Image (cartoon, rainbow, N blue to C red; front, side):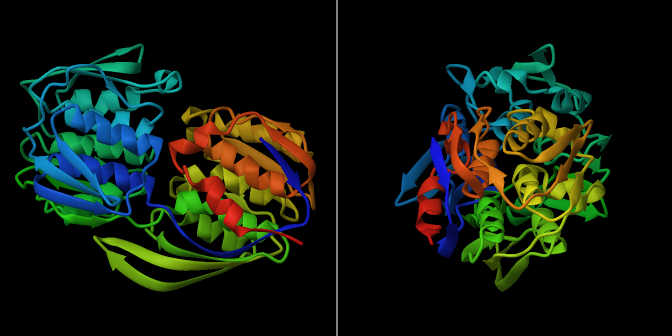
Length: 427
């Protein structure tokens, strides 16, 4: 894909696509609930469709009518043995969280994904699930995972070394198949969509500071779910509007969960002109509209407890830092090395090729901002967030930027380019 950066502004009003994290969880929880669950504003991305497909393969009736999804829940023990291996494509969320459900079943299953998934570390879920009695075999800690029935599932108290919503969620789902209370102690709070949705579906969950307590004596009941807009997906437009002169956009229906808004806090700290308004709440999730105007950004230091609240947004934050005045430091982000790509190396390589003085560190990067980026050949690394971040960077670059491959966008935001084109104006 070729992109020419020439006097571009972003102007207009858009609606945020459904949140990917919440869409996954709604399918999973709806499938093992009792009764009917309906889902509106679902994200029909490649990743989320893989989640639908694996539960269909386990006998769950899932229908799509006029963009609304209806799930006839089968309860905790109503899933059926699939006829083939469960395939998650590129979705790390699906394989990690669904493994917690599979470990509670009375049948054997194998769950796998594409070449990228086969390189992802799964020990982070295998260890706690095994501590709960799960029977999981892997290939040196990587997928595919073969999960066999266990007769000795039990509750545990688990201390997470690294805050991870996916690991936490896999434990929480397996906890539904044990007796008593399971406790998860986090080093810092990660995104809490699973906790909020389980509560909404009627499961007994308590939260005490960074500790989550799941009582397995309650059962999930089907619900009507509205998926808020995905703040991770609209983060690209937030940064684009900030770094492109004379831009002004409004984004409607954005999920504003306190564990996901780290990017807003950081951008405002950098000097961003961002307004939050029209606050509301649906199925335990906050929703807002966001107004953004082009701003002069300053360098920033990003580290510590805020990292789990913006881990997926760091690639596009790096673009903002590259266009800011002064030096920025991103640290405590080693989790980025085991995403769809090594996102630290990917962003350092790409932004360096665009003329940015950027240095990779063991757990992040140091970025010296500049007024204008330089066009060059860019690698997507088959990573949707790297691809979309670099498309925004290319709009700020002088000359013609070539991005080698863009199909990975379909993983999380199939309509990204169409939405971007609606906002683009040439001076």
